[in-house]
Image (cartoon, rainbow, N blue to C red):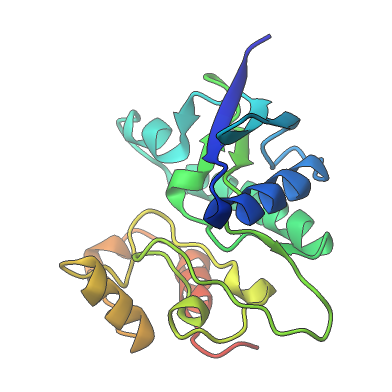
Amino acid sequence: MEYASKFISARAKRKASALREMNLLSGLDHERVLYFHDAFEKKNAFIIVTEICNEELLERLTKKSTVMESDIRSCMRQLLEGVDYLHHQNIIHLDIKPDNILMADHHGDQIRICDFGNAIELTPDEAQYCKYGTPEFVAPEIVNQTPVSKATDICLTGVSPFAGENDHRSVLNIRNYNVAFEESMFADLCREAKGFIIKLLVADRL
């Protein structure tokens, strides 16, 4: 049986993050989350061993001549199942983005959420913060350094409405809530899909 290995530097700045990721992932068991197998520490690195997934979701979709809304609906349903499981464990991922959604195998349509490097376990009645994220997909709470919550784990499905000509502009767009979607992207979406995307982009936490 084949496995994948993730090597994380054991330097002081990364050590706490690596240990947190190992501890969180080892306690998870859900079909929408990358399966943990083992973890160990070497002299210069922490190594996390998981099931192997050879393809990202976007890679799979770009190979199709036509992507149907039903395909995206299935992916989103699975993704929300995985996020719901994490939240019931009081864990927030904090880096939900297309790169971190993998296909479980070459032929099926089952997805796995991966990369828990930013994930944290929520502590009741304690404000928690996150300093890191991918500029185009990072949540406003992270940019503004306000407390994160389960609501932070919204996801953007391939095209960021905050994307600027560079990372700095993207971060400014998020901070100022400058949303820009081309109308053509919504032309063929059903009303429910449009409503779902709009609700994901609500600036104020409910």
